[in-house]
Image 1 (cartoon, rainbow, N blue to C red):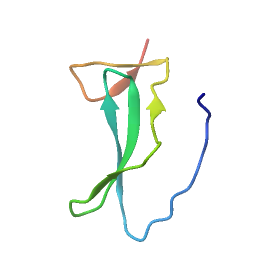
Image 2 (image 1 turned 90 degrees about the vertical axis):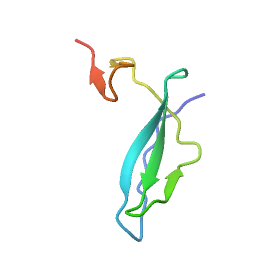
Image 3 (image 1 turned 180 degrees about the horizontal axis):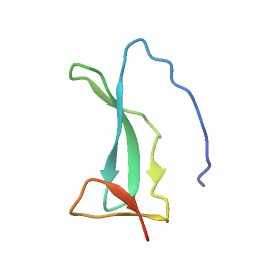
Image 4 (image 1 turned 60 degrees about the vertical axis):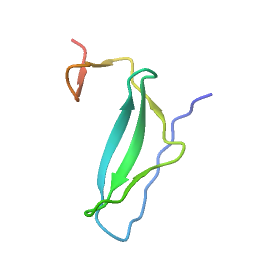
Length: 66
């Protein structure tokens, strides 16, 4: 159902890359934001959280389990 893939995106301007989190589903979606205000989510970019990482509801960061 899921597969690992890699790619390179060529852009015409510098972009900020981030991710949105769906806490209830454990998915991350890749987002791109330009230097102004336009934001786009890449369709089909849902990424499952890796089992060795945990997301705390009190923080925005993902940190490795110890």
